[in-house]
Length: 185
Image (cartoon, rainbow, N blue to C red; front, side, top):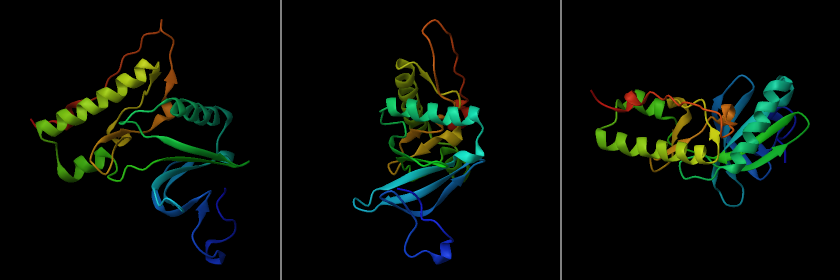
């Protein structure tokens, strides 16, 4: 259920988290690292967000737990799926869907702007996912190109749910998202 203990050079075989073999690092943050892993039986690729709870204060730990609870509520084709949560005294492991083609930010930086047809398709996918969230009284609050991932079919998968929150019907929230980077001028 947890990663192997001890120095890497003394371990035999791959590092494991539960039924997953760690294959590499996808990204690092202040208090978490995201690893690419493969299920030992099904061979399905996943992303595992590994969070060192000892590095978090009570407020940020509560944000992580809120992220987990809200992600459990969401099931949409354009939102990263949370498959499993594993926890030890000091670590938290979030097993999620893996978006093979990475961030749309990197895609746009490497390939330039999308043509109008492809931009329209991506824009519709984002709106569909945001509408789904709002219908469940969930607001993302951190939509940006770095949180828009691309799966193996180049479909949008929204990630970065740390700043999600549930809102009450009487509250009013406005969403701003700079979609201009999709289009050619």
